[in-house]
Length: 114
Image (spheres, rainbow, N blue to C red):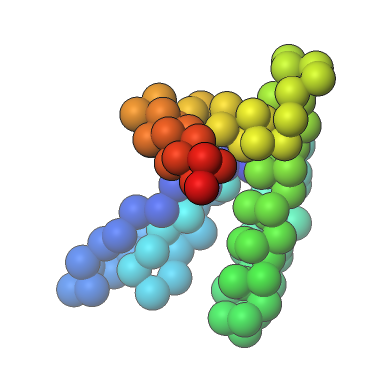
């Protein structure tokens, strides 16, 4: 899995690229992919930088959708027989906290009584 670390630098300082850092416009991205050739990784980063904003947003949304789908599938495996609502509440609890999940659970129960 690739991990990125963005470091914002002041515009007066010239960004320095060292090792596997890729710098442009004051932002340094350090690649963390262990199984990708550094040159191929630089090329991938450059393609992302050149892509239109709509394309980058689309990629981010797609990745988020995939991660959420995988997380819900993992929850479903640990809760066989759970309803979609129960899986959704567990997802909220794991990712946003117990307090928010309990509040949502109360609201759903109250809405069901109407």
